[in-house]
Amino acid sequence: MSARTTASAVTPATPPRRRTTRTTRLGLVAAATVTFSFALTTAAFAHVEVEADKAQALARNVTLTVTSEAENASAGFTSVRIVLPEGIAPADVSLAEGPKGWKLKPAADGYSVSGPKLANGTDAVHKIRIKQLPDAEELAFKAVETYSDGKVSRWIELPTGGEEPEQPAPVLELKAAAPGAKPLSPSSRSSPTTNPNQSATASASPSTEKPSASESTASQEPSAEAAEKNDDDSSSSGLLIGVIVVALLAAGGGTWWLLRRRATA
Image 1: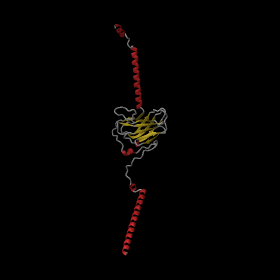
Image 2: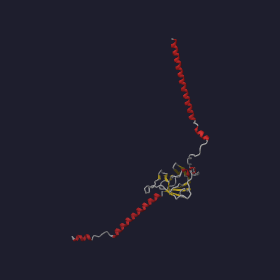
Image 3: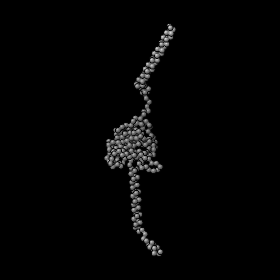
Image 4: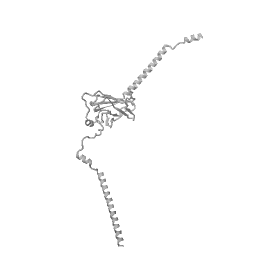
């Protein structure tokens, strides 16, 4: 009994060197995991970036730089679609600079810039000029990127519940408005800025001017098709009335002839 106890008591423990090596390996693995996670997080936030030369609320004639980082090694960018935040009208945006051959096309809720395919791995960088920024603390510019192979990347998610999304939309933080800064009147904001780089102009906004007397009269006059239809209806009505009158006369004449014949008999 004592021999067994003595043997178990002198059993050699794990050498300190092996413990140190195991601890070092675990530390390296943990460090690598943290580094890899940080790299993924950094890449996720860097896919689309938005910068402004005047990042201030109610600032006018602001140049915005939008950078779409290439993530497709086998295809190049062909277009970038931007959904404008509330307070910026598509008519207030013009293309200041972009890839060679790319044009700007306004949309109902934003704009798109597109053109010849960029080289694989080349970032798509374009600049727009905005008439005035709205009075806000931050602006989100949702972006949709399209590659030449048909792949589409959507960076349109906004933070919810304090958690960062996997495909976040680029956000521009603004400073407080300068003292005395005021928003432009709606009439001033409705007219688009003319720019030769634009492939199409925004659709004209409804005019606030009252129509002239001639325009009002013209708008009240019936069209040629309506007038022709009215003439046809009048002719049909007249023909129907004539048929009814002839029928009544024929019926009256027949009744008179029958009564006269009976009287003669």
